[in-house]
Length: 267
Image (cartoon, rainbow, N blue to C red; front, side, top):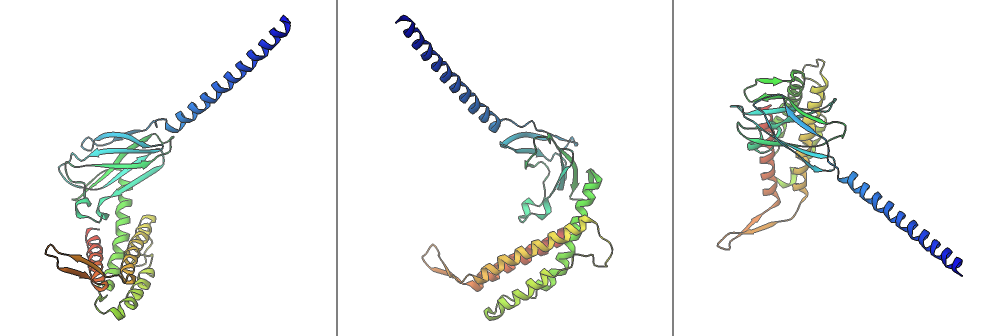
């Protein structure tokens, strides 16, 4: 009898130990998974320029970091070059921004780079800077490449802008026909230099980027043309202010024309 009780007690103890070991292994597995998902990236950020210091580096996602830096020069910056790891390069060109206040990094102002990084690419370095007066410091090759990109974009805007100015957003019956003709013109802009001379990869990229920006702007204008809704607003005295499709199209056309002309001038 005693022997049977002992065997039963042993079996209960064995089952209890097995369950405990299983639960411990499960808890360890869950904890390990969480640690892997939320672990900190070992990312370092630095600047090659004393007057362009790094202010902070912060991880804001599993593989995303935010690097905040400040312009301590006495002149505005129009472009920056970032080296990420051994082979990745990021070109930040401020003059492409839509709003005038964002078209430069003013003296004394701070900005940030948000970037998804490879865990093996531990270093982010500000390696080149281009100023509003045309002077530059740091990575000459990448800055030259950025200027070549700008040259390609400028060619496309110079080709397109005179044609776009001929668009007349006044007569509703012909606006769509005119816009389709302009879209065809934009889609056929050559990916080539004006004189047919050989072009670098950077110039080609600029030509394609310029064409893409133009077509994107035309898509917005086409959206307004196809939108038949009439918007009504009310002034403080209760007067109804009606905005027709034609008025919206004229407003969008004016904004796009101004933006493209501004880009051509800044480039």
